[in-house]
Length: 274
Image (cartoon, rainbow, N blue to C red; front, side, top):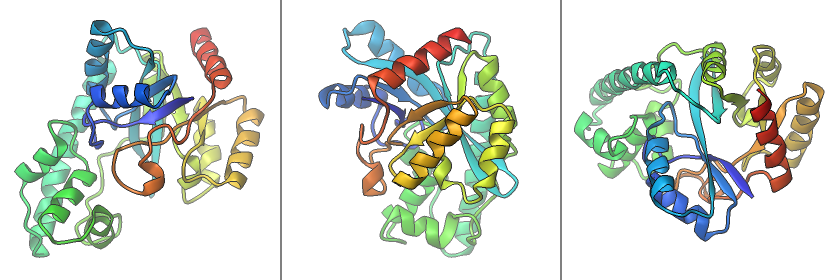
C-alpha cells in the first residue's frame, strides 16, 4: 500500500517527517508521499534521513497547495517535484509570509471577541512550520476557550465565522502550472469534499492530471463515480489518508487509504513519461 497524502510538523501535522517515515515502515507501507501544505520543508528533512539510513520504504516528494476557486476551497496535490531553480520555493515563501500576516489578523479578530491568544502560542503550535488555522485552533483549545480544535473552527475561524479572514489569492490554475513547471504531476485532492460537484469538471479543464479517488471520507458511490470520471478524462488515480496525527478518527490513521502496488507502478510510469 502507498499512502500518497501525509502531513508532518512542517505544516499542520503533529509528527516530524522522521517520525512519520518510521511509523510508515513499522506498519508495513510500501511508500508514502509527504504532502505538507504550501511547503517543501518536510521533504528536506526526509531526504536527509533517506541519505543517512537504509530505508525499506519509498518516500515520494510532494506538496499540497491550498487554493481558492471563487468561494470554494480547492486543494491541489503535486507529486515527484524537482524544484531545481527555486521557482516553487520562492512562491511558497511568499505564501508563508502571507499565512503569517493572516494569522495576525485572525488573532486580532479573536481578541475583539474576548478570545486572547498571542502569535507566540500559535508559532509554538506550528513548531517552526508553516502557520495555518489548525495551529490557531489548537491554541484556542489549549487556552480552554473550546473543548476541541473542531469547536474552535465551528465557533470562530471557519469560513463565515466571526474571526475568519480570507486567504491570499492563489488559484488552482496557478498551482497546476507551478507543479508542471517544476516537473511534477498535479492531482485534485479529496474531490468528494468539494461542495459544488460541477467544480471538478472545471478543475479538470484547467489541466489537472489526476484525481485523489481513494480518501477516508469518500463513500463507495463517490469512489465509483470518480473512477469513471478519471478514466473518461485519462487522469491518474491516486489515494491517501490525509494523515495529520490528529483530527477526525477516520483521518487519524496512517495508511488507512491509498493505492496498491500496481496502481503506483502505473502512476510512476506516467510521471516518468512526462
